[in-house]
Image 1 (tube, helix red, strand yellow):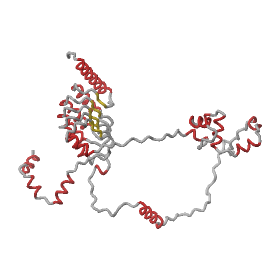
Image 2 (spheres, rainbow, N blue to C red; image 1 turned 90 degrees about the vertical axis):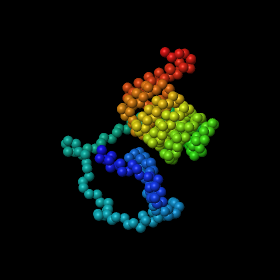
Image 3 (cartoon, rainbow, N blue to C red; image 1 turned 90 degrees about the horizontal axis):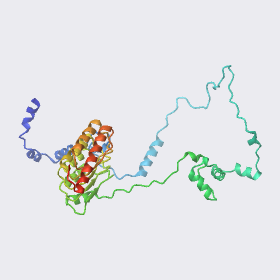
Amino acid sequence: MSYRKGLEKYQDLDEDRILSALTEEEIKMLEEEMVELDPDNALLPAGMRQRDQTKKTPTGPFKRDDLLAHLEKQANSTKDREDLIPFTGEKRGKHFQCKNAEGKVWVPKQKAIDPVLESVTLEPELEEALANASDAELCDIAAILGMHTLMSNQQYYEALGTTTIVNKEGLDSIIKPTQYKPVPDEPNSTDIEETLERVKNNDPELEEVNLNNIKDIPIPTLKAYAEALKSNTYVKKFSIVGTRSNDPVAYALAEMLKVNTVLKSLNVESNFISGSGILALIEALQNNKTLIELKIDNQSQLLGNKVEMEIASMLEKNTSLLKFGYHFTQQGPRLRASNAMMNNNDLARIQRCGRPLA
């Protein structure tokens, strides 16, 4: 109570009068303090956990060649540390010799040479050809002789199908997997600002907003999308997979779900939303009867058994959600959520068929 009494003197303060008396520098400092950051989230990069405190102006554009020349000059000008004892190549100590129980030096037995292999002789031309053959040529010869265990299937069939040397790696290539050319994913070409304006203007041609895997979307911009979707009557699918979204974004989407009556699908997978943000989204479904698909899987941290039990309990109270994307770690909430989705789908099928509800 004493703490609250100490705060009573600030209740009648005029915030506008205080703000009008601030200087430009003080207003700038206040804006920096109000930037939404998450200093406790170790999974975020440093630039998103603390504000930029650099006051030094840039000295000029980045010049890679000048930097390498400076580093090389600095390395050459630094003298090497002298060895305490100079290296002379002299061997010190006694050479270790393995001895048996009788004290005699143990000498490994020489492997006997197979007399059959020793007696095999080839024509002089073949002896010379094999002696001077490279690993690639020996590998192709092994393929022709049917020794396919010395190479990969791809090299074996290529050697049989051509008359030239195709293997360039030799006989050791059996331990290497077949290299495939990676197929790069096409980058998301969505214009963030333009799409946001279309959502705000309630564009009738915009029914799906896909911001997946765009890494540099500011958190205020994502919250602006959620705010714009409150009054939008055309967007039916909203996806922000892999956009580094966190709890403030989840809270904004939860407030949006409470008033939006058009959105059918929401996907927030592969982000930095914690259990409290996920619960806010699920709890908002109690006031939403139009969303039929929600995906929340693959967050940066596990939700835990307690959160999963609360999610299952909330899903059992919902009758409109048909698809729920999350991999439960516990069998109990997984079964409860599965039964809830099954009941909702059965209910939707009965309504489509026009039969009365039991």
